[in-house]
Length: 259
Image (cartoon, rainbow, N blue to C red):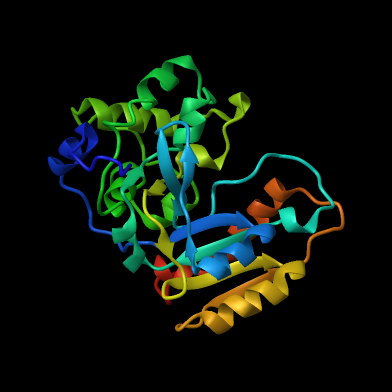
């Protein structure tokens, strides 16, 4: 069942603000090596059931890979992460954009008070132009991608002011990580892969499957191969991948002559 696309409380509040226009960033979806064959067979990413929303969804992050698997060690090479990045022209395929991690909010990672507020999933999203969220809460793409929230200044709007206060808080001692300050992108329909893929980061053990996907793509993508240890941590590897993406995709938010 598709998510409703009605105008939300946050959308209404943003429409009243004068925001600086920013370049749009792309999308990143995180999967694991064992899923590559099925992705290649179907030539698309397929939504799976989400208990929070009660429907089948696909999750992406805006700009860089922030979502990560559970923290654990493994020697199973098929569990190592693969990041799939897509250009800004794929933003129109998303149903909703949230200015925070809905999974962390639902799980109470940010504490009971913020859980109550942030769990209003039907009111705290926008359906288009996620760069407005960056402009509102971070001021620039570079600040957003480093998690640097702009100094808090009340805008007179309850959802905007509350989200700004939330993003500005240091919740690291509560177990919050970079996902506190990520823009979450949600699709409720299958996502066509082969015409949109722009960049891939993958473990060396997945080289054959990535090569098959590359051959099947009409528009060839750039890639980064990494070599994990025999016994490695998929969650830690995502941080490594994020740094590679920050370097390889910086042309999307940083001009060539930027210092």
